Amino acid sequence: MVFHPIYSVEINNKEIKKIFVSKKYNKKVSCNICKKDKIKWIDDKRFRCKNCFKFGSLTTGTFLEKSKLGLKIWYELIWCFAIGHPANKASKLIKLNTKACWQTYQKIRKALVIHSFSNKIQITGTVELDESYYGGLFKNLRKEKKWEYRYQNKAKRGRGAKYRKQPVFGIYKRNGSVYLELITNCTKKELQEVIKRKINKKSEVFTDDFRGYNGLIGLGYVHDTVDHGMEIYVDGRIHINGMEGFWGLSKTNMHTYKGIKKKNWILYLKEMEFRYNQRKLNFDKQVLKIIQILISYNKEQFRSYST
Image (tube, rainbow, N blue to C red; front, side):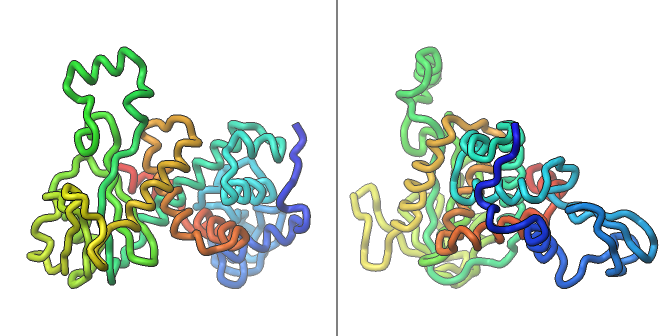
């Protein structure tokens, strides 16, 4: 099958390479060994140093390392990812192997995970907190699986669905970005460990009346709640509608993947987080942002975050 460019028809290979180079190096490409900037390009990725005569690569130490795909194909696939094409559709559009497209998408998602977790700056201002559960509906399960959950008394809704769904904790800064973390259980200890790590003290924090948020005032936060049990969802400025809106949007978008393995949940959640946080950028800037993330981090960092 011959590769068919769609999004790079108005940009040549030299310009695409210049984009990748500019996102990894500040000004000039330098040798990985002697750090001199006198190099000669061999192809779109590899170069040779004129000083020490060692070979180097633009993709060394990045998620593009050891990839057999050229930069032009990477550029096309990043565009497909940014626009929201599934890997199967991307393979048909640019006429590339489906497996190669899916593997590239997974590398992009892994880089987004690192990009999110590596941000150590604490959130300040007005913040909404909430937890949700991701997974298929009970009515869509196979008959034998339904009976198994009923027998084990695990056919529950709401927070009782933690036995068969993945709990996720979300932090949303009003009119800003969202941050997600997978959690094993919605215990007070687990939730407040994330809150203390990610939110600056003295910030204004809004939650529902779940007991896991009790004690936030004692930790130094300005804490107010809305009682969803009493069907109170807005009390002046006090509400968590921003976080609730994100849950609905992300779950709708994730339905398109038609089933996600448990080990891959973090990849797709961080994709939803990235898309929401970059929603004000046009597709051109989103593509450049993804290229910068791919070229700035490596797979070893992902292993350290995923263990």
